[in-house]
Length: 390
Figure 1 (cartoon, one colour):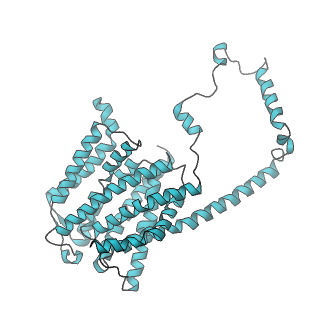
Figure 2 (cartoon, rainbow, N blue to C red):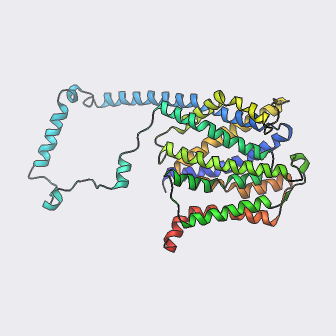
């Protein structure tokens, strides 16, 4: 387990806390300002601030690199001398060849060993020695253009679910994205399927059904504006499940574009382009959503305090946490990052109990446990396969 992998796990823990806190704040916002589209659009568009940060970072890096080269040239003038431009390389090769042909060489290779390469030819080592080429800024912008609609849909469905059901129900359903991540990853060649993973699918989906059928109630039910008939809660559950599907698809594509450890893509710049394309190209979606009755008529916040809360929640709950989450995906694996996000389930239940006085039926609690168990089985599938000989 490398240093970057451990850092990814720490980021997952931070994102879990930020996401649950942001979800509670978002649901509080919807009490007075029920505009899921506006909250989503603002949060996603604010990621554009990563673009100037990324360009300034690269500019500073180039300056420091140029100064470092100048210092090296001053310290070792032979490196920058004209020798290497007028046959110096040939002279160097001749000297090396002569050293290898010396009979009194200190390194005595046997006849059997002489024909063997000094570096072992192993697939894993070869991949380490030859890292993937970092893609250009134009390619990063192209990836951002493709991913922006998918990320906006994911965020909007999650916020629309929060506007219609509890934070705990939304987190439980959103956490099923790990299963969709497995299937989509297998389809795109980023993961493989086996019997334990299939078992995990059925266990987790059974848990989702139980949480959907389980009863929840709160002392501030009227404040949360959740219909007692459960119709709005059912729609919210549907939005949460659809958000999990799009989340899983986005996670796999992000890992595919970024490379094994994020070496191909500057994630900060990628999210900056996602924010830019959201800001410029997705604002018009409010009209069809309003016409279909999914989104209420667009309004702006009625108070300066609400403006501040919405912007602060967008900066912390979207800009900062989404960037941390993206780093955790590329530094670990999509499945591990998604498993970590399932830790929002118990944390969200506790938060709902403490803040809203919400209660949960036994079937709901058992369903939540099954969802979490499904993630554990899926992520230990390789271990189970070895133990059971599958």
